[in-house]
Image 1 (cartoon, rainbow, N blue to C red):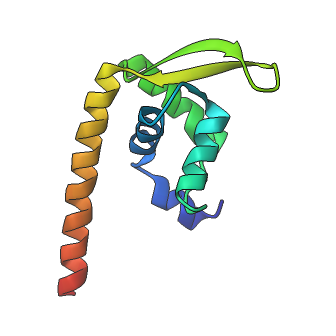
Image 2 (cartoon, helix red, strand yellow):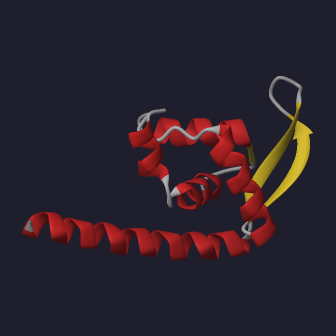
Length: 111
């Protein structure tokens, strides 16, 4: 991923991870990263160096929970799921993002 794409992702990773986890069952880290890439049509590519520290931080905050289980290829993997606190945080993150996006759109229209 180029530097420009990394800059696009800064500050949005929690929002993206929580949204992906809110849409379904528990997922392991690689699946979360793949899903973000797929849904963003390859605009956002989440590397391990960003994803796993974020997952750990969100787990510590109580927004997600994790447990070890066998993956599709029968390897041991940590699976993550969103918690009620994570759903509340997702609502906060979405409102903040929509407010910021509207403000940016206003500036772009005026400039």
